[in-house]
Image (cartoon, rainbow, N blue to C red; front, top):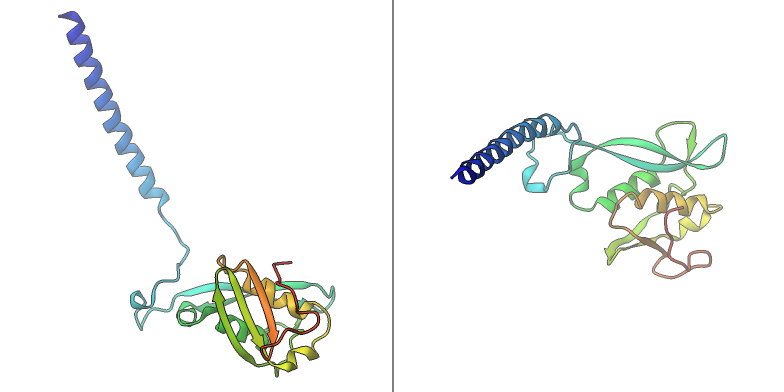
Length: 173
């Protein structure tokens, strides 16, 4: 009989302990769930009146060091819904907002096609891209586009053809 009472009291203590633990854990989870980051929502969940901003990095050459550095831009998330790769690449070709950076991509470069398949982003540009000098023009595209987690490699072609210096698949530098 004494063993039964001890067993019942032990079970009650365990149940009360679990309830107290659950209550305390729930209250701390509520406090920790304050998340100030804004996610890009699917198109149907973004109303016309919402102005959700997200940050993107566009890589340009620094005037003084001649190395690629990110310029942070805040953009409306709605712009990324239909074709985020095309939108970001257009921003990159338009050039930096700050005077301390320069774009290595000629401004008259046109985007012929851009598509994503199985981890690879295929970018087809006009021949004006060949007027750029050095690898900074290539890696400004690669580093910028690889901020999309799904992109593993980038293949750049000119008017649908492989060109010297662009024969390989590029990964973030």
